[in-house]
Image (cartoon, rainbow, N blue to C red; front, side, top):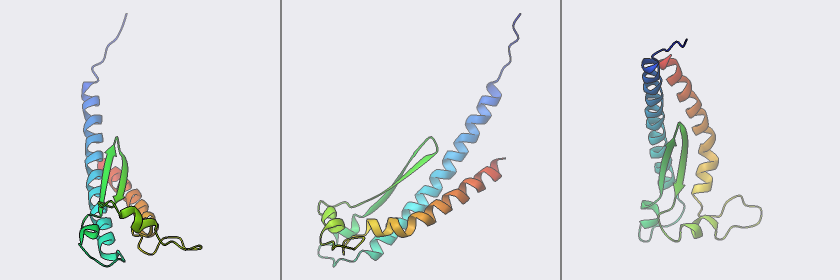
Length: 126
């Protein structure tokens, strides 16, 4: 003898819960990226010649099953030069670096903000 149960309602509810969680986390990540990109563009230490290097700094995110990855990037070929060239012994970053310094200063804040957001979402959903 076998007993069967219809679990489709539970499955639908779990999927809905995960969808809301993913959407809320993506909204947080998008907002975080806007702030990081703005900070990079404002604090870049180089002189603007064509304005392309500053204009093409970017922050983006990827959400894969609730795992958020934020990427900061240069959009110009010579971005690597700005990040690495002219670094002197004992210096943490090169003089025109912007990605490294922003990651160093903002990552702890972003991690704390993400933890708070996850807790808030869980409280809201449960």
